[in-house]
Length: 205
Image (cartoon, rainbow, N blue to C red; front, side, top):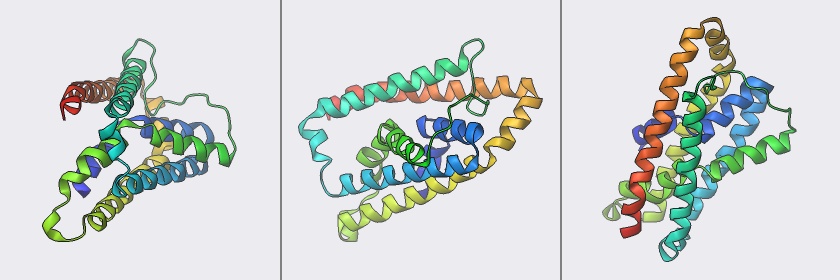
């Protein structure tokens, strides 16, 4: 579960883009406040999935399909922003308005709640690690979810703390920034294609 969580969090997505941009434009403290919001978002997903409310997505599949479709479009947009001529990479400084702690927390929360990677993690991936023969399934789900949250918060906190330093290094070496945009854009586009391909299978499931 820890390895799967690490692979997911290292793939650039809405959370990483928002946290990095906020950390570079407003400082580490703003990034950490935003990260606290994403952490609460993970907790909400974990409780929703393990309390059986995820059955709503099964009973009304278009809700889940709509969530995934919106996520695919958003990831594709981020990929285009990175790959297009004159585009911006994850660690390139972007001008963002300074926001209050309350707004930073709220934006971090909303970004995570609308993150298709988070939905997929809790609704399709984590259940695969649950073994009914090993005891209470809800307890297993909460334990696995806690592992995922811990891994994600540690990795994202590291990114928040290092974002400014990485951005400065890239600014001094424009060639590195170009390759960073290409790699990030390619990864984002690949994730979008994988999610788009998975939508029909979720419909039939």
